[in-house]
Image 1 (tube, helix red, strand yellow):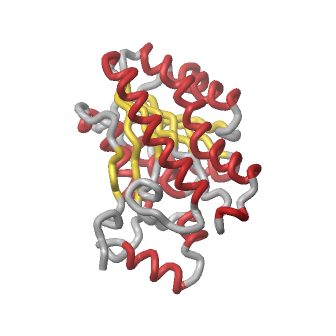
Image 2 (cartoon, rainbow, N blue to C red):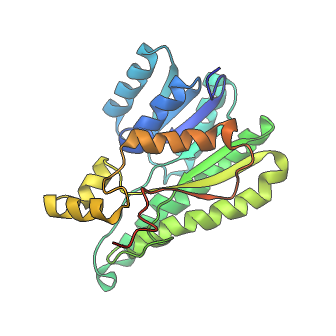
Image 3 (cartoon, rainbow, N blue to C red):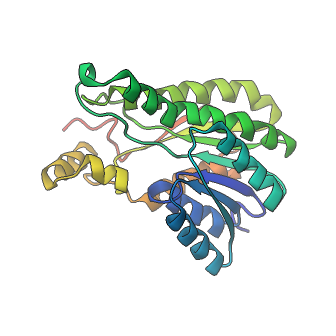
Length: 254
């Protein structure tokens, strides 16, 4: 039997990268998926790919910073598939990069809203639906940046993503007795559009690859496998964790 047989999952940030790969994997493992992002064409292509492979998916286009969109995603899961078992709150962005004194308050607030407040809004509406099913898995995409490694010029990003770990711990404690597991997934450098934007030159790419003990960046499909672990019953006694899938960047020093 597949790992997510007869489960219903929400995946945000699904138009590319980790979200796209995870939505396909969840569907292949038996889940019915509600996929979300801001780009219609990419979501339509994803839904078509899942459907052609025999899976089930619906797409909603919107901005995760919008509370009404967070509510609509849960309503879509209920209306189309009858419930919610897994929520992978993966959408996010690098935000304003550069010297901290040069970052405006508007840029700071936008990064916090994109990466942290959106996760709160997602959880706000996902948790009641998970409780209706008697429990489930809530996952946030965080990062090693600001957790095990400090990188210059990334203050807003680091703060927003580190905040997800605090949110994870609080929700895991608040809802554990009711059967809900809450975990943060911390990828290392990953070959995605966002990863390529950060490592945008051959020199930068070589530098980022060299930071990892494995001396390479991850494929999005590799990070999706870690998301599948957290979504499935394979992680039935795992909650409140910051799961590193970082290619050893957190321990590597040479």
